[in-house]
Length: 342
Image 1 (cartoon, one colour):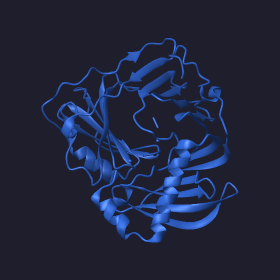
Image 2: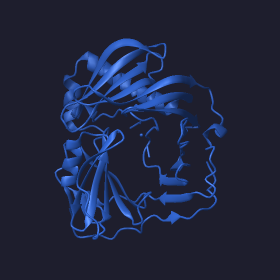
Image 3: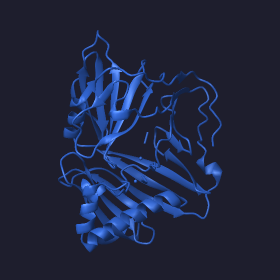
Image 4: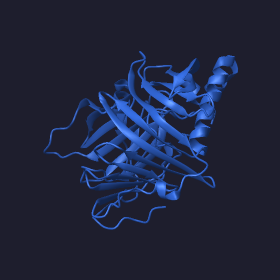
């Protein structure tokens, strides 16, 4: 499932703010305006999601009604997938797999990919600066550069609309400035209101396999069911965990999420088939990387849109301690009628 709006202040971030020059303060204000625009405006539009040599056309609907936000993302290409994010859930319809994934909504992230969320801790790990004014979608835009301070995260280039601060173009970049993935709006319309019907999926899910994934409460000291990560890269911390069934797996998987407030890494831990060779090493998964290793009788895989060194460091730090009691895993539902949409 997919990502932007956010959160507190660390001592280092406060020190950076106190020594920042005026241009940096203005760059932060642009990101704050962007986060507010993404959260509070009614809009619908069409954009291209570009990664590797592939391009996917998408349509997004974002509706705010009495402070409640609902989003719908629709693939206009072959897969026909749709994602609906309401107040409590994120529902992903995968018609090519005849599957619907449902998970609890755990944050305020937007469904737009490759758009960073601003929070006050960012400057401990990223440098935020204004670039030139330029054009995007025929509109005047301010370029904002978000550059990582170390090798453990990627950066961003943003083209923010001068009037609304909406991101008309966004690029995820490596440390050398090479583009990894980007979004580029071809059309963006602001509305006084968006009809509720625009937020209903066009797919009923009738006869599909429904997989429900219930988020679990976080345990103390970063330990989840006896599993945790030691020696995390600077700034990363445990932000979510759950036990779930995922597509393609017949056994429950522990899913831990580590984030620095912008970049995030998912760690999946599952019992290993003793008859099969363990998966080891680095692999590319779309715009993301995955790093796998065996730990005792389990398979550990770290996945994220971060540099490979980050995944390797996090995967290498996965350890198992005395197992604590954990809630039962989410259940995979057999084909049946979908729940009512909100």
